[in-house]
Length: 305
Image (tube, rainbow, N blue to C red; front, side, top):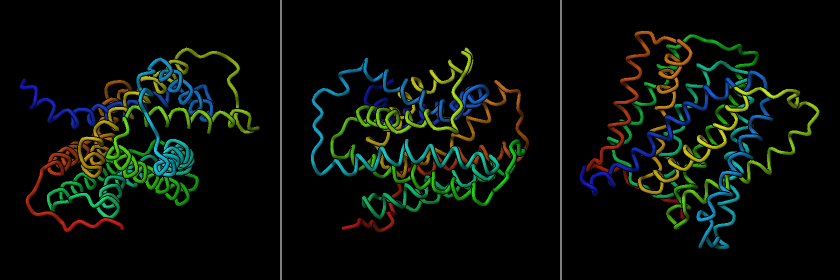
């Protein structure tokens, strides 16, 4: 393959890998939650990620944080992973996976329009159409699936999921802003891991947190996988992709997560897809493809002054 052509599609490949790894995290979380409290899993994940970055000192070399960037960096690590994981955990405990999935599908549109208004990113009519199609596909995918979790308070749970998606959208926009200013995507990922560790470690001492009494190999390996492969791989690949293409285009890959999750569920958990979900998968992939097209008719850009 031609080198220049490969480098041209590298951002899309990175985002594809990020979506695949994030989808695999749902399988790993299910295995980890079997024996470990959610706060133990999240704190462990952040600590493992931080330890991995200690073995990558080159990520921190030559990095100079400018004074004007301190506030956006602090805001980025606050909303994700800190607030994002809190809202996500609360949401999944109160609503069904299907309803949460529909709200998750709103994230790409939030990022795209946020980047449109705040960063002045170019947005074509084909980009908008593609994102809408992928969102419809993701919603259909969620609705077509069978509910497998209880929903003691779906209204409140959906509200928490919406807050999580607001955090994810804000993270995507700020990340694009910081990479545009020259910050290394892996350095920003490392900051997230360290900030997450400092934020979630105190939760281990809360009375409501049940510390593990025994060592469970499968759950422990799941935490290691989440902290190393998913934290470094998924966030690193996504950060790299965002640094090379628009935040709106990059966020549209998020709609691949439910597709990959269902595929892995079929292979690993012996789950099946129904006819509606197959059609929905084609819509998601088709919308992703269309949203990446560089159309000639842009929507008039707007950037906050």
